[in-house]
Length: 178
Image (tube, rainbow, N blue to C red; front, side, top):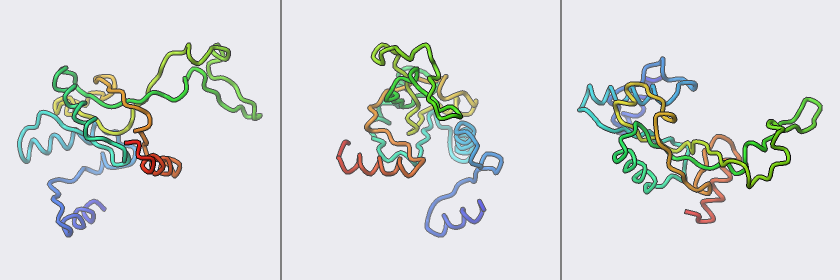
């Protein structure tokens, strides 16, 4: 399949300098090994690179200014990675699950009566991009724990995994929130 895809890309003028090996080409492969392979291939085929950025294709609200800011953070701080994060819209310490009998139960019952304003802010990876030092990618370091985060507003984050995500992205785009 990869050879067919490569031939298709070449037919339409794309440059295909290398193909990802099959052992890191399935839906379960983490990002770091994929970018590590790419960095090593670029070093081998062209020249040494100092930085590499992975941009996910499912983030239509990504702003170039966020990428520039993240790169500047990476360059000025000396950390291995920088990536955007977004605050959870509701405190996760007030999260619930539904029991087999249909009743709701708090995952953290000790916070059932805690005011949401009194709970710690929590964040998640925005799933947009990751700037990293080429050496850190090559050494298979962990993007999240070996890096710094950059908070961005939630109205600019849609990670398209579901049809609802797509609809939310369309609505935000129509509203002109960017």
